Length: 454
Image (cartoon, rainbow, N blue to C red; front, side, top):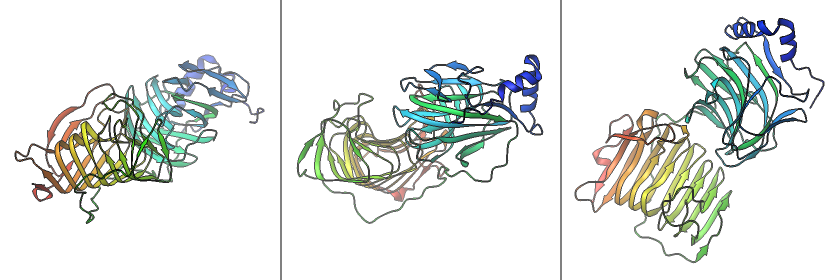
């Protein structure tokens, strides 16, 4: 860290005077013709004068502004003027600890309050996400995998011009779009259940034209990829049983050799149970039988593949897809899921094929009240269902879609199994409202020939 660098915030104050600073900066931030650095802080003088704290444990040390508690739900520092409108803010950010895959360290722009802002977050899952934050309701404006890791410095930049918001990590755009949540506000340094350091904060009243398009966008119209393999006709017999006392981390490929793994959780629907297996981005879990108790089944922290995985008695959920954009379930089956089998919390598309489900509430549910509102998709092909109330539940107001082909429903003479149920997604803390069901060519895609009753 070069401690000899001057901090521009104080020279600006001295040059124009305390009373004129607010007016000059506010006016400058409202016009792109006023192209100047209007705020800068390198923390080289050892203090955080001009910043206002909201939560967390903050200190200036070794030329950086550090928040050291991973237990703080929301830790924020704000600076600048509430009247700032069009500007770009940039900072170097270094995560030093994540309490979970959804924990974050990031930068904020147009913060009109401590809970309303645009936020560019480095997540514990390794992704970066540009977010519109309004209390507990978080709308994603784009995300990308950047391999965010503790101990590494990243340069984050948010550009706000009118309703156009863009976010960059190390010069590459990771998200952007049109959003009118908030038109003016201060800058911020933010963490949530994470620790991190911040340095070289700068605000410029000019906003550049992007040269790099967003690297990740939700799939607009996913299509099934049918295979000829029929769903298994019977449940497999375990080759052995293995008691698990703690979550098994998986990177690469884990082949269970058709052993039964069991032993975590209470076997019921209680929330926040640990998973049996936690898959890193790109991991594959195959030839595994998950017995009871199974805790929260499988967690996929990024793109993942589950091949010939069987759940004998689903606990909280069979699998939760938390990060990444593409998740594949090929073969296997699940039974005795009083609520749901597959929970989709992250963005992207879940592919379920050559699978059988028995005695379940829902085979798939796109989260309707998670902290971040993504567009989510599911594609089901060659699935056999028995005693299952709903195949897919999606949120139409967020643009979710569900596609079905070669679905076989057994022992349902009254055809009471619901294929595609639509909900109104809501902010975290509220409950989604069911608003309809059935094929519509917009969110739910299937025809009578795609569904066979036997």
